[in-house]
Image (cartoon, rainbow, N blue to C red; front, side, top):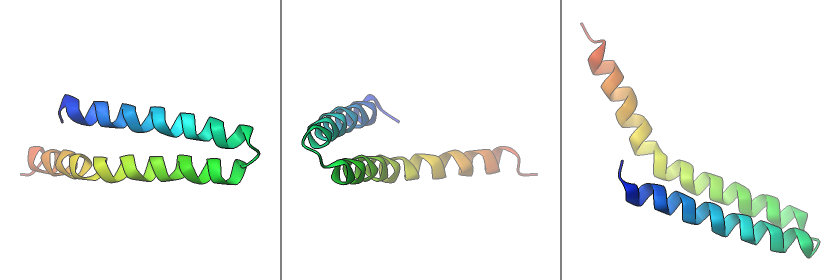
Length: 64
């Protein structure tokens, strides 16, 4: 996992938080919730290969 992924996650977090604040102040709480949910799903999709690699490493570590 590189620094590039951490910066991308931080950028998504900043953009989603700004978008949510704008949407909440304009009275669109539902769209703000959907925007934050979309940001969370995007980051989780980026993390899936690393989580898979972690479980694979743990499985190989404890394999007999």
